[in-house]
Length: 339
Image (cartoon, rainbow, N blue to C red; front, side, top):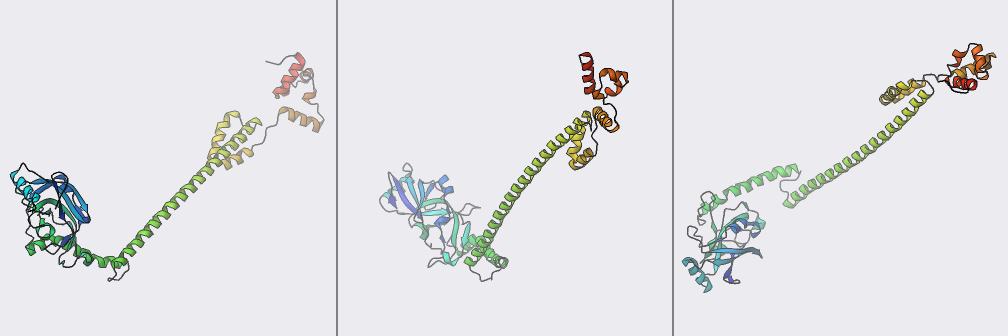
């Protein structure tokens, strides 16, 4: 114990030494949060009496748990204990804990003189100022079910206290044989060999997951490229279809009213629609037909005749088949275009 600032006194309530019951508790496995919520300081673990003070600045230093104690000097018992601490008659403190959540019988964790297991995970319940100190003689544990203090001097009670944990550890040891078989190791394989084999499996899993992610990314990129190519190809076909259909309308192979229908056919099956359209012959104009006949058979061409000559030869009906030529001849004869 040492005096802290003000009227607070700093106590070491726990370290990792072997207690008189033959086991020890690791500071690294301590859960201090429950005590911090209700930091009561008792005298000699007498929780049926009112607290004599409160704990502050709960901390871990060099493997020990330290608590600054502020005594309730308005309480007669608190004032009495504080005086004995101040005068040096009481110097030690002890921890009150719940039964350990986890224990280990690993020889590597045992210190000389340790006959019991090592508590690797436990929870602090309270702290007490005690005549005989800390781990060695003043460790207290409480039954979670009854909230009563356990007599640790009763060896059988101590065994019952940790029997569950021991059985769990024993079960784990039995499971090690199954684990070594799965890892294709001998039953006598060391912990290091088992850890390395497990790590190899973890590394293999991580590598496979990374490769799988890469393959998914590459697949997605390839799919995006294919989609972009298909979109570009469809757009090119669409433009070509428009050009082919418009050309067919212009040269008279199809009627303008059927343009949209033809474009739909091209959208469904471009190749088939293209073959169908190309099989339709181009319609020749009346002018070209008359000119062709004139050259081949020596007949007079309508284009070379006057409007009057055409009327005299009763060929007006033939002339009107070529609207442009009819308009030109009508304009030549009357100086205006027909309505």
